[in-house]
Image (cartoon, rainbow over all chains, first blue to last red; front, side):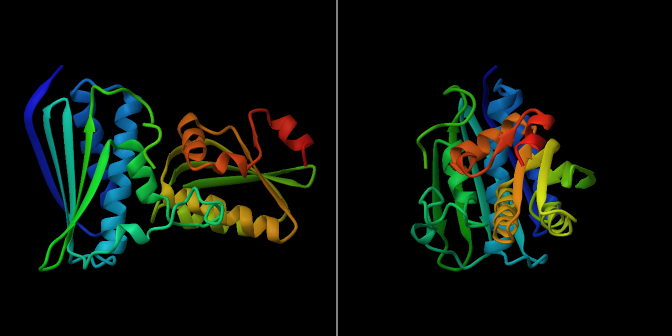
Length: 150
Length: 108
């Protein structure tokens, strides 16, 4: 089933317990668009990682700061935007978890998982503060984990 | 997250159920492993419903802590999705993973 021009938006405070709300929206949207359970799960996981990063690294766990998540479905193309009120960062400085030197690190896999499960991810940083992450996925492209995206 | 521990042949078999995610279960996992009475630990993950990169990080951190103390941490009954998460990050090469409990016990 194709859904065209569907848009859902949610704003949450920066509490970890709110992550699941956003993840569930993502998974339901994908399932309603005809994606199988596996595919929906991995997209939900990418969203979970993105929102967790926005809360922890972007908004520094300040519950007064918000994370905004929007989902836009046009045909089979899903675009997910996660925005926080943080000061931004350089994605190039995030270490590669597949590097043997980093394999046993306890952190640093969130962005890797996002890149693995989505077709594309892109960060933009607002001059006045705030970071937006746009993740895209063509829902007709296949199920399970997208390979070679790291 | 809920964890129940039993001991078999001086191996602590810790069955973990529920979520191991940021702010919900990740730290608990670390604590329950740290407080195990044995240096031989078998983590039964069959009851894990959700895990994220933070949970994976705690698994890795616990493995390092146990190993550095001269112990062993092994995994039992990995759910399919957790198995895939470990595969894509090549962590599957780090852990010994078992589908059969007796086989896992015999391996220590």
